[in-house]
Length: 336
Image (tube, rainbow, N blue to C red; front, side):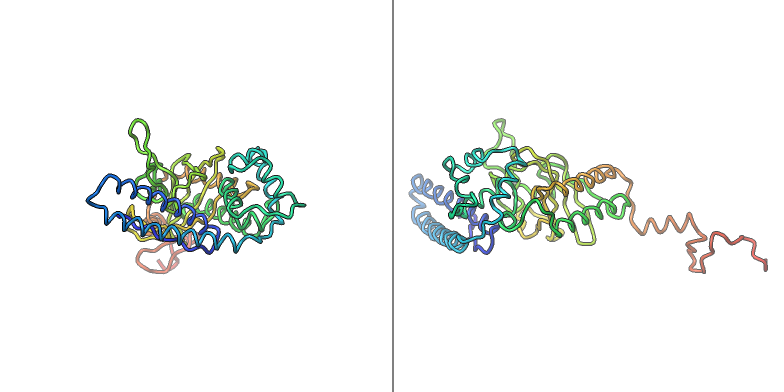
């Protein structure tokens, strides 16, 4: 029992996703302990106790999941059908392709999401759809993807300002690399199965869980910057459909990073994969190009800039603290 697996409470669809993965982790742990029990007679009491403990947690997690599903069964499906049509067109998929990805029978989704249908897709299926298309479940159910929201406009303005500050050298981005090293490691976890040649493989897991459905990989280097709101990370990514995009994170952890970081140290600010209008991705493209362009810039501190400016412009910045002399005044004063 080297690592403790806790039961996840569920208050949102994000919690639901974590709880589902936790259920899988608990199931794997029980299977592993049962295998150890068959191989090691000396550890039988300890292993049996561990199995019982894991089974209790599994049942408790299952209870949380069931209660959440029951509480959500009467969700409003007003936008689901049109949003699903929109997502399928965006990705060049047919509804039969989606049904295959979901592992459901042919015609199940098309019949259920039909506006005239009195049935609703199960919460689990809705969650899987959101995971496949990388959209927030609440947005999928409550927002028309074809109408821009105020929050999207605010995020676009945010990226515009980041680009402006990057161009003006108000903020400077640090290249963190594209491998699991230093702070980059907080976004990836080592895969249980390495490459055939013995090399390590990593899966994208900023919330601490490697999500097979998400299947996101890096396409370029990760960059970080210190801003007025703290340290942020810009990640160029590619989803399972081969679409390129970005995710921006706010790092709230301490200065001394360790591999055992708390997943609450990362807050997702935004993801271009959630914006189906692609307006946000265009602004992220512009920002990333600016970041790459200024990557090699010579950087000095603000105090050093001030010192150099005082030396080069003594009239405007009198080092002795006397009154500054405007550029337009003749150096030979009348009382000399």
